[in-house]
Image (cartoon, rainbow, N blue to C red; front, side, top):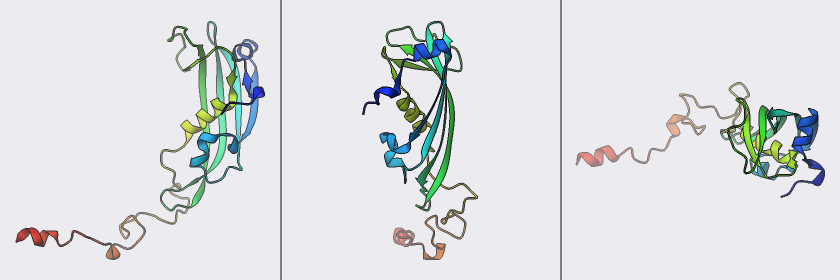
Length: 172
């Protein structure tokens, strides 16, 4: 999916100016996130502060904030996860020597031309998602693991043990 023309920017020109760009996106604008989300009505706030990362290398500090609704893998109920991320990117043109980026910047190799801000935000959101979606410890998850439960929410006495008689069979 290609980005809208107004979303593509010349990072070199913006870095030369030291420009700051703020954008708001709907979560429905990020197709790679669709399978992870319960709802897409939320908005994402992004702020790009462009700067020179190194000699002839444009960079930016990207700050992304969003509240996304995910499905808890423990109780399968929806919950809201706050995502906040700040990353420093250095845009290195294809074919240029790598390793010219100062410490603290992530090197991003790009073709000559313009860069999609929306794609940068989507990448950062994907990297910010939790590995396992679940309620926090104090968020009232309806399925808690405890010594009285088997991990599936039922009492231990109701736990089915299909191999419980195997020990007796092996004695014979």
